[in-house]
Image (cartoon, rainbow, N blue to C red):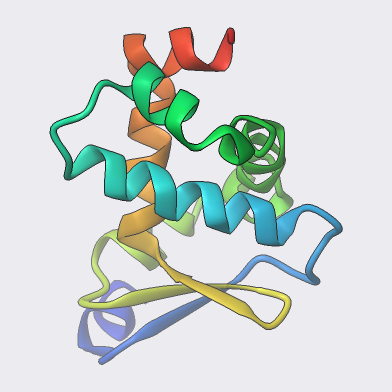
Length: 115
C-alpha cells in the first residue's frame, strides 16, 4: 500500500460530510497558516482578526473526526506527494492543516486558545 500512495500524483482525504462549523474550521486553519508565515505574534493576530477566535473549537472538532484516529492515516498522508483534504464540498491542502495544528499546540497557540 505504501507504494500506491508514493506513486499517486495526489491523495484525497475524505473527512466526511461538512458539519455546521467545518467552514469556520478551514477558515481558521488558513488564518493560522498565514500567521505562521508572517512576523506577527499569535495573540496580536487573533485580536486583529476577532472572528477567528470563535473558530478554535471548530478546528478542534475537525481534528477529532474519526479519520484522524485510523492507524493507516500516517501511511496515507506522509508518503503522498500532494494531499488534499475534503470536508463536504470544501477542500484544503493537508500542509495547511498540519501547520495550523502545530500553531495550536505551540505555547503561543495555547495562550491564544485561552483568550
